[in-house]
Each structure stands twice: as C-alpha cells, then as structure tokens.
Amino acid sequence: MNLNQRTYLLVTGASRGIGRHVAQQLACQITAAASIVVLLGRNESQLQETKMSIMSARPELVVHTYSLELATANEADFARILDDSLAGKDLAELQLERAIVIHNAGTLGDTSKHARELGDIELLKQYYQINLFSTLALNREFMRVFAELPKLVVNLSTLAAIQPIKSMAYYCSVKASREMYFRVLAAEEPANKTLVLNYAPGVIDTQMTLQVQNESHDESVANLFKTTRESQKMLKPEQTAQKLIAVLQAQNFQSGDHVDFNDQ
Amino acid sequence: MNLNQRTYLLVTGASRGIGRHVAQQLACQITAAASIVVLLGRNESQLQETKMSIMSARPELVVHTYSLELATANEADFARILDDSLAGKDLAELQLERAIVIHNAGTLGDTSKHARELGDIELLKQYYQINLFSTLALNREFMRVFAELPKLVVNLSTLAAIQPIKSMAYYCSVKASREMYFRVLAAEEPANKTLVLNYAPGVIDTQMTLQVQNESHDESVANLFKTTRESQKMLKPEQTAQKLIAVLQAQNFQSGDHVDFNDQ
Image: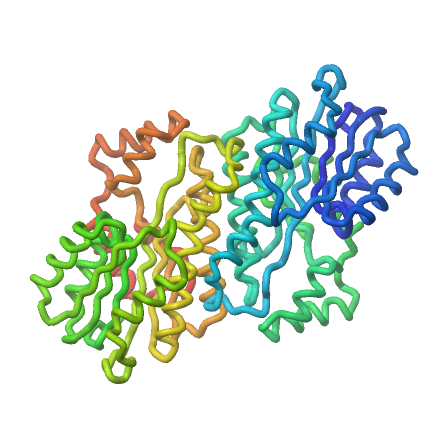
C-alpha cells in the first residue's frame, strides 16, 4: 500500500471506536499533500473530534465530515457526499492516484432475542438497510466514481461472519452476507485494480461488546464478554487499527480473503 | 426421521422444481393417517398439481395449498396460514407428534449485474424480503406453533452460500445470510427438539439454472451451466429430493451442518 500517492480515503463509522482509530492512523501515514479524507458517521461533534486530531497531525490533508443516519440514507445521499468531497472536480484535476474505502459502520442488532424469535419484517429491513444495503449503495458509488483508479476496499468483518454465536442471529447473518458480497466483488474485479479485504478486528473494547455483555440472552456469551473485559484481555480500538494497517502494508492476502486480528 | 409418527409437513416453493419433488417424496413416506401436508407457492394451479399427485398416492393425508407472493407476504399471512392448516385445533387434539419445515422458496436475483453495480436499496429490500425476511417470519411462526413438538428445520441452501460465484452477488450474499441464520438457530436450540439442516442440492435442471445460463454477465459461469446442461450432467429435481430424504433418514450430521448433494 503506497501511501506516498495522492489518496482519497473514506471511512464509515468514523465518529468513534475502530472507525475513528483506523481513520486517524491511516490518514497520518498519507504523505501526499492535498490527499482527501472523508469521515462518515452519525455524530457530527464526534466526527469533528476525529477530524481535528487528523488535522493537527497532518494539516496538509483535506478532511471532510458528513453526518448521516444509515437507517434512512439513500443512494442519492452517497452520490452527493462523494460529489461534494471532490468539490465538483475530476480525479485528474485533483491528481488523485489511489482510493481507499473502509466500510466500518455497523450495528449489533437485538441480542436479547433468540434466532427463533426473529421475523419482524420491518425491523429486519431496517437492520439490513443499516448494515448491508447502505454499504452496497455506498460501495457502488465508490466503485463508479473511482473506476479508473487503483482501489482498496476494506470490509470490517467479524468472527461472527463465519462462525455462529448464540444470541447474535442478526449480527452473524448480516455480517455473513456482507462478507460474501465482498468475496463476490473480489472474484469479479481484477485485484490490481480493486483489492478487497474482509478484516475481522478481534474482540474490542467498544460500545458494541458492552452491549453484548449487557443484553445477550445467552448467559455464557454475556459472561465471556464480561470476563474478557474484566481481565483486560479485550483489545483497544487503536491496537486493531494498527494491525489492520500492518495487514494492508504487508499485503500477503488474496483479494477477498478473511483475515482476523489473531491470524499469523 | 420417524415418518410413522403423525406429522405436520410444510414445504415452501412447492409449486415446481425441487420443492414439489421434496413435498411429493416426503409426503409419500409419511405413514400415519391424518398427517398434515402444507404446500406454499406462488402458482395455485401448480400447487394443485403437487397436491393431486400426493393425494392420489396417499389419500389418507390432509393436504392444504396456499398461494402467496413472498415479495409482499407479511407476518400475519404466515400466522393465518399455519392457523388455517390446523383448522383451529390444538396439537394434542390433532395428535401431531412431529413437525417438519422445508424452507425451499428462493429466487436467483439479477445475474446480469456485477457486484459493483448492486446498491439499489429498494431492489435489495425486495430481494431480501423474498429470500430471507419472509423465511425468518415463517420460521418464527413455525417455531412458536410447534414449540412443544420435535421439529426438523431444513434450509435449502447452495454451494453459493459458502463459495463466491461471479455474477451471483445477490444470490451468494442472501444465501450466506440465510445459512448463517439457521446455524445460529441450531446453536441455540437443543438438537433433540429442533434439528436443523442446511442442504445444498447440487446443480439441478430447473428454471433457476436456465436463468443463470441465459442472463449471467460472466461468460465462464454461463458456459459452465450451458455445457453441464447440454452434456446432461445436471441433476433432476427428483434426484436431489431423494438424496435429501436419504440424508434426513441417515441423520449422520450435526444440527446446523451444511450438507451437499455431492458429500459422502
């Protein structure tokens, strides 16, 4: 991953947690001035914090923030955001050489429900809109706008995408579909033009793991998260962000592969 | 699988193809009179054909048909169908001893599209409604109504649920999520009360494989289906139905496993 090139970097869920740390660490390694960093997230003031930490370290970057709700965002919103972030200029004029998207945003779903209790169609539509459909809509726009540039597409995946976990029927199933979508994308696109990575970040000390611990209907799962947290064996978001960047730098994976924090 | 017990059997997509053959073959092995067979599908006249072929072989069964569009069906529709099929009686009164559901219905999605082109949110909602959300809504109702009985839950899966195939981003991703949902269900439910199987039927001579061959944007995939069909190496729906029933009879799988036609 040559970060000396003039880069367009887009990170979703960049207001906090893993997304914020990936955005910060990756942006700080981009050396080409006038590279563009785009931060998407729900909370504008937290996005501003992410932006400020990047700007203070790398004032020569152009950083945009866009707050939006993925539950209601549509195709036009993503088109508008990408368009706005390029300030109406074309890629040649901006001298962009590489584009990176980190699809990080996601929600856990209701872990108080057993799999047998899932089936509220409106709730499912909304959950899949946030975690899958909006990701695909954004990715389509990204692939279209940067068709001519070498692209790196990272899907923040999870162990739960490849292994069933009690009380996580929502999360496991949507993450499985999302990972499979990116595997098909990788199969279809030449890796030298579009390199795809499904990265599983490990068990991280975030709001999401706290939610599992507090709300899971399965005592063994709730306890596992609780004891992992209490014994301070949970990873910090900055640790997994660091590992992700190391994986991207080493690039010893095939396009579409699932790589876990604990691999190697 | 003891089909001498008085059984409730529900099959979706029973108007044709695999669903019809599974319904026919399984129903014909149910020996207990007054067992109930419920056939769901889009086409009422084709459902009647399936029903007639079952009734002529097994006149002592009670066979119901319900035509509905999964694109618009909701939770209430499934509740109404199950309720109607039990004629307002409770399980004890009907002396039911076992319940089986075969989640077979499904659609291919648009294989003329590359993965990078997916992202029309309304289309995605509709596709997931037909192939995932309606399955979960029906399964929830099935699990609720038959909570007290030993249950067998079969998900018609596919190789494409575990392996990316070019031009099949819709199908691969929704089938991956559906399979993962049933794996979580299996993890949560005791196998002696709810046994779950993800069955991949192989490459079958059906409308769906014809559609791949005619519409896939990927020439190698279209050609593979074409030459497999022309060399008569495609399986017939009745063959895979037979194999599925053999797998269920032998029951040498763990609840939640993915079993392929070609396994063993």
